[in-house]
Length: 253
Image (cartoon, rainbow, N blue to C red):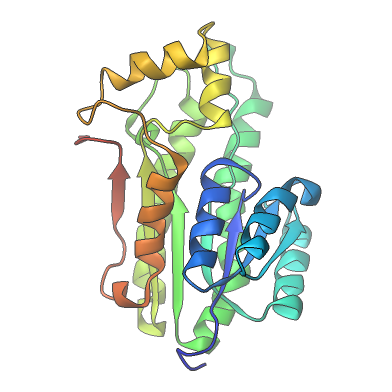
């Protein structure tokens, strides 16, 4: 594949929030984008925003934790857009609770979407990257990987994605494929709004309280994360691999 051809990117969890912002940003950089989410119809707004700006995008419905659905989704991307060489594993869910109240189902759901989903998507897409001699995998970790009360499942999944990322970098590097992780801090999305509701706070109050703990004195926006992801997917970032970038408005241990 020549570098003048349009690269095809896959963004999971692309219906809203960080995923939607990332899909729009990658399309603006000239990529054709497959927007994958559990509900294909929910991807409509993201796809329309891309196409209205002159970009190319399709919506694909798939449960990333289901092997057959992942294989079918990637096959559809290949058929409609071409072989994907950029993958952003962003799909995620929250099932927060303290350990003694956390159900096995809540543990399994979070680990299946974040970890199993990223594994299945990467396994399905990497063959196309190897064939092209070029690939960019970006996994969404989180500052919660460092530990966060009420998120034993989410923290474990996000920490696991960091180890997964580093192993991908080691295994796939010789094929021209890089793998990196972006670990957001507090980002204003539907997910953080749900967290505010869970703890009984209004979202604006919740954001204001969070901002007081962030050195840049504001919470993050989805575009802040999309900017970091875009860097890792760039042609020029070929010597950056196996890294975890915390995008949190300040240093994290």
